[in-house]
Length: 404
Image 1 (spheres, helix red, strand yellow):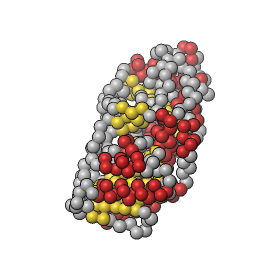
Image 2 (cartoon, helix red, strand yellow):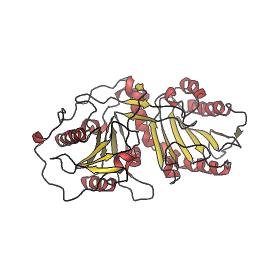
Image 3 (cartoon, one colour):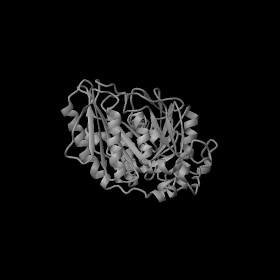
Image 4 (cartoon, one colour):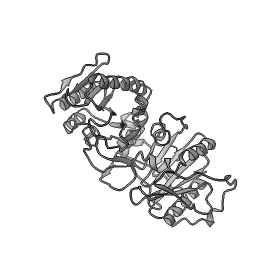
């Protein structure tokens, strides 16, 4: 599993890229254009062939991505936690920053196989400060067996509690193999639970040190999370190397960052330590998420949701798949919502339903973005200039048409 530091790119759950675009005017054209007339900017316009084998190199990251559908979104527990961070946790090293550094030997010793973490906060910046915001991070780690999970949960809590002698035990007698602690003068709480072969770790912070309120939030999180875990089917350890790089052909339909080069799974980590338990800015590329992460991208809390099945993610592109073409078009209109920092620019000629915009606040080199609709697929491609993003949008459309 490749892992390197990487700055200046789109975050994993980059809601701004997809939720802000111009309104689509007029009636969509029924006939597809002649693809040979499109300016593809060096791309072939054809889907990539999927590499045959993944091997152990990518197995744990791919299983961690699958585990996204085993984790409840914090906003399902508390609708005010709307700023979200969703990241795979494929190894003990990748857990550092989400969990304390001292837990790494424990996770290694007890055979951690994969994991996923979703954090939510009411801080609109996404960089919450203790005492100034409310937040909940739900992290699920898969261990080698249930006994290893029980030992891991106990040792994670003990290691974390030992960091400060002011920590006080917080009991959760209604749950099996559950441990928690809290400092009376710090508005945070950590709770860890073993459930089958899984360890569920909660990190909670609030604007006050009200332990009853934080414990109530933890209880709601467990009540939502444990049934989700029971319905998840994990990949058997011996079958991990056989996991496919491209479930349902999503990545082959998405424009790669470099022409002709397959987007192999990679976990990027930009920085550590915004606050303990929150980690730094992290994201995965070259992966396909199921409905949990896809839903985080397009559906706002409190509004009627658009059903979405999956999302593929590469360096500067996303591809959403919906149950049908009508739902995809509904999502495009919902996501086509301009803001003060995003202005409409021209769309490439010959590409039906392409919606392009310039975002003055986007991280370089992704100032320009186009949304491209084809059937039940909705793609988002980004580039540094208007001509560049036009080439990408045309190439993306050609790939989608060719892959039909």
